[in-house]
Length: 164
Image (cartoon, rainbow, N blue to C red; front, side):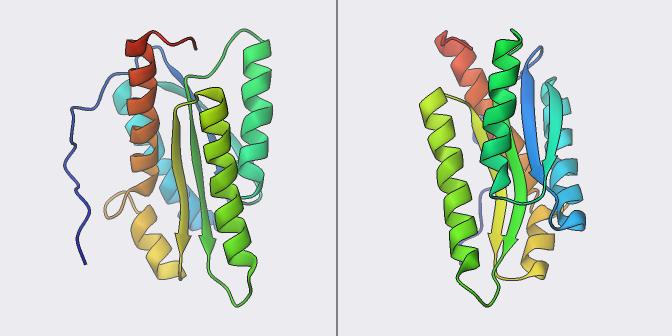
């Protein structure tokens, strides 16, 4: 199996003065904590401020994000991007496919419809061991990867002159 590229394709941009919304599902506490640690480090390195909203599971992430994005925009303090964090582990029923597929679809729909820079750090894995490796900032750092994706897209939006 091919290994993912770990060195950055481009220098990480600054997002100084930027605001990112993190919506995290803490259904699996230890995995969620590692994802958050990676995301926090990446956002701090880029100079971005962030707010965190915690929800029970992955299906609630897009709904909470839409609520918070609308509230921030109404208050005149829109977010520059969104980082979604969580984990869906395959079980013995079809529930995994529904949660994994629908949460991802809703996030992409939200991002495209709103031209919202999005980093999707919702892990979809076969077992807890896979999740722990992917979430750990010293190994997979998928929380950091999701934050860096949102940062790159937010910087692109800034450079393009697109409205916030």
